Image (spheres, rainbow, N blue to C red):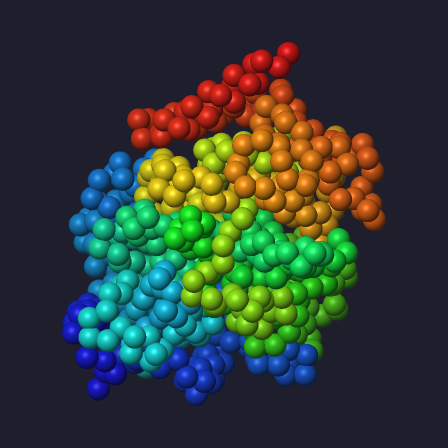
Length: 607
Ligand code: OXD
Ligand code: MN
């Protein structure tokens, strides 16, 4: 007997079962017993390799099919009725056409497999922003990852009651089994991947991939693409942002949100250990934040997730000691290398690779090989509660009030270390300017500069220009007085010789301290606050000496170069931006066209 009387849910589960023809349906209760059983099954199926209990207790390594290692943006679709509502940055297919296409792929796709029913909740229990979903999947790997990343199981079914609303999330790896066939360890159908979103009916259909961003449907698909459309309709914000709690030596606390494209150090910022004495950073969330206006006109943020699905390579005791401690036990690793004594390894974990490594594909590896031992997008899935820097209030249903929003890309030139917007509108403009050199989190070439406004390019479920208008509208709805200040940051600027100018990581606390001081005054216009600032045509930058640099090993000329605003580069940037804005035709908000014209004007006024 299914453990619910929710007729809509029961009907949908039956309908899907009729289409995908599973051998059986199983309703997940989210218990530890269920988890243990699934882990055992994953081990006997060869999907999970248990790691050494001595060095990495309760942890497992999964190796994916080598063709299924990242988000597939080219196979991700927004299926709303009108193409213009998806906008020029999304792949659009009309909903009926996509349903027909997908119904053919899903027909019989779970044959011989179990269909797991995963009731899950995103957002703290009882939060005004809590959203329920149900994922149907034939992947036990997805079930156990969802158990870490969301609140999952019976409690959610109980909360749904008989008619609670939920987002329908359908997922199949697309590898039916015939007769007594045994499954391969990582089933998938790489040639036919579709990740389709139907924002008008709040549905997600994902076929063919088991990779986290494509298959854990609570994350990018629900908490960003579907939630962004819900947020537009209901007046809140669903964002690809970390949320941190910053405590100054005086004990004063401010919360900050930060939008960074995938694999640009957002998780490192979320768990930062300040080098600046007396400062403390704690974690509210590392990847996604939902924000709503409070009755006091401030933006309050919650982290909709309960776990981290972080990029492993580059994580070590220096770059992110809190992440290293977090994944010391009870972690699922995917596509890292394996050491001979049953532990995981990835590039950057230690300066030298241990001997006798097995690479992410399961083959012997040695440092002479030109390829990496761990996949560059190898990941850890781990409960957020295990993180030493998690803030006590990370699950507060009301959320935390945000004082500053940071936008940061990976830019070798042009963007100074930190820049403060002149106003809310100018801040939204800076968010639209975000661009980054691409990383391994999505398929495609790495290191190419691409526009990634608000770090939402792959995640905005509707027309990007309407999304910008929605951000602008916050000031109209709430008044700008208590809205956060906005900043552009860039940890990745390079000098003439090509090396990074800024050490980053814990030293980023110096930038946070300046931002903190800049938030010290009410209102948005003017230079005020403790941190002194210098006005430039592109925004406020720290005045000479305003960035705390005691003990910092960055020479003065280097620091000057980091904060330099190169007018030539910005004139080129403004021209690129004008071309980019042209893509959006008459959907471009007038406020942003005005901001661009004002920037061009300011740049023209300087000789
Ligand atoms: C992620 C991503 O996995 O942005 O967080 O790709
Ligand atoms: Mn992300």
